[in-house]
Image (cartoon, rainbow, N blue to C red):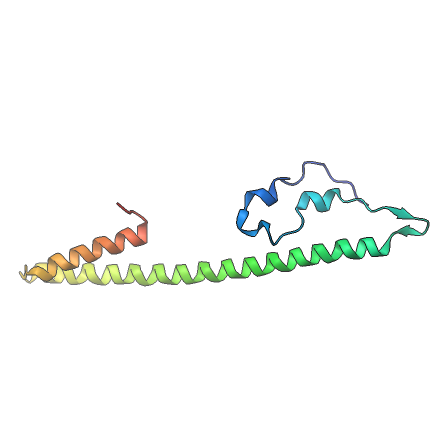
Length: 126
């Protein structure tokens, strides 16, 4: 078995993310530190298989978490682009209304809406 430096991975991995810690069985450090007992003919196959099953479950869960996060990032990026386009459109309408001399209540409504959208898009909540 290859020996790696003992502090190669963060041993607090399970505690660092409470949301996933109940689904993840092993930390990278635990995998690194695992030592199998040796029988007369080598490692005990049942022990190795059981351990590898846990590793496989973890990797499967990691892949599913990554896919969910990537989908969420894509959805949020799309929403962000739509909101920015809407802000641009509303600003153009506001400029058009101001240049035409229409200072009616709809301009105030547009300003409020732009302000609210900017807060959502740029995260400036008051």
